Length: 167
Ligand code: S3P
Image 1 (spheres, rainbow, N blue to C red):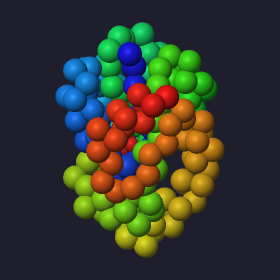
Image 2: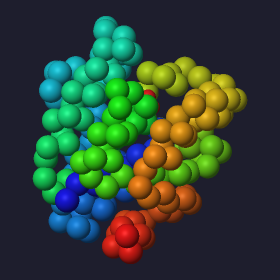
Image 3: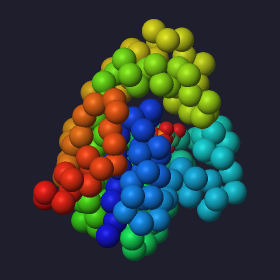
């Protein structure tokens, strides 16, 4: 079994992914961490030294590798579904689940997050909200290709499991 968690930055893919992996006995993979390990550079370093296009290529390559792992929950990056047919790849190789969280919640979480994210670095709260609104509008069609969608701020892994088991 292979479950991919899809959604915008701050939607809780890593937090929920870890809990879902624990609940199901599957292994947890954070795609950003996997990219960092394979390239011996952090995500912000890759963006700064090689640019976003190079990051997207590395991300696609990482996803191709991870899509061959068995019994995993994969927390993807917020942009992963939107490049190089990654969404099709994930739908072909596993269960995809979109964590659909409202913009004000995303903005609040991202404003307080300690993770460095190159795309939103240095943005004021208002800039952040504007950016999320327009960026999410472009990304939503990709996210919505997921097989399952779950909404709300307190998404729990039991709920995800029930949804998947129902089919
Ligand atoms: C990105 C999201 C990040 C990371 C990179 C780009 C994006 O992952 O992959 O900074 O394009 O939305 P998270 O969604 O885990 O923050």
